[in-house]
Length: 210
Length: 215
Image 1 (cartoon, rainbow over the protein chains, first blue to last red):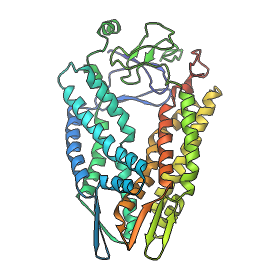
Image 2 (image 1 turned 135 degrees about the horizontal axis):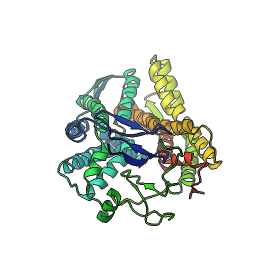
Image 3 (image 1 turned 30 degrees about the vertical axis):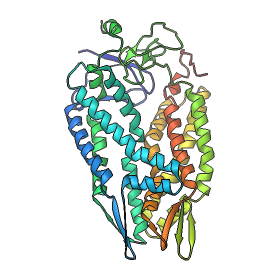
Image 4 (image 1 turned 90 degrees about the vertical axis):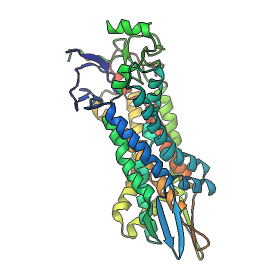
C-alpha cells in the first residue's frame, strides 16, 4: 500500500493518506477538512454531467424565466434581461455583479470543466489543463445559480400579490441546472486530473517520485 | 499518526494552493518558496498579507453594511403613490402577506448571515492576532461554515433584480431599484473576498515553532 504524504490545505497538518476506495472520503484528523474523495468514475461521469449542464445552461439563458400578466398586460424576463433592467435603471454595478454570478461564472465553470475533462481523457494532459482547472475552481464560489433560483421564487411570491405569474421553460431549466452543477462537483476528483498533467518542472518530478 | 504533530511549514514543506502537491522549496527557509513543480503556480507558505487584507475587506464591508440597511432597496411607483422598501421592510412585507417561511429565509439570508459573517471574521482575526491556542477546532469549523453559507446572502440582490425586471407596467405600476441594493451587494462581495483572503492555517500556527511571516 502506497501512502501519499500531504499537508492539509486548511490547517497544514502533515499526514499520510492511504489510497481511497471508490466512494471513499478522507478527512483531516485535526480540523475535519475534507482532503479528498474518490468517486467510482472520476472523469467520465462528470463529463456526461457537464455536457448535460452545458445544454441546460443554454436553455436557461435563452428561454423566458417567467411570464407575468396584470390588468391585461404581459411581461416576461430572462436571466440576462433581469440584469439588463438593473443597468437601465441606473444600477450598472449591481447589473454587472448579477450577470457575473448567474451567467459568466457558471458559464466559465461549465466551459472550463468541459475542456479539462475532455483533455484529461488522453494522458499526458498539457499544462494548460491545470490552469483551466484552477480558474474553474476560482469560479465555484461565485457561481450562484441556486441562490438565484431561491431569489426568483421569493420574487414570484411577492409579485403574486399583484399579478398572475407563471414559470417559463427557463425556470425549469434553472431548476435542472441547480441539480447538475453540484452533481459535477461531487463526482469530480481533481486529483485524477493532476495525476495526468505534464509537470511544469519535469526534473523535480523524478526527484519527488524517488 | 506520529507522536509529534507537525505542520508542513514546520517541516520545511509547502503545499501548493492550486494542485495540493507537497514539495520542498530549493531554499528551505526562503520567504518566497518559488513555484510548484507540477502546476507552475506560485507557492506561498501562507496566503499573502492574509491578516491585513482580511481586515481591510472586513472594515469596508462593515461600513457598507450601514447604508445597505438604511437606504431603500426597492421603490414601488403606482399612479397614486410611491413606496420605498428597505431590506427589513421587505421581509416584514413577506411576513404580513402570509408567507412567513419566506420571510424567515429572507431575514436569515439578508440580515443574520451578513452580520454573522462580519462578527465571525472579526473574531477569527482577533484570536489569530493574539496567538490564541484555544478551541482551534471550533474556529476552523466556524471558518468553514462562513465559507459555505456566505454566498446565500446574495439572495436579496436577486429578489430585487427580478422584481424590478418583471414589474415594469408603466404608468400603472413600476418598481425601480434603490441605492441600498448596491451597498448590500458590496457587503456580500467584500465579505466573500475577505473569507477568501483569510488563511485558516494561521489558526493552527499559534504555539508552533514555525515563525509566521504574516506578522
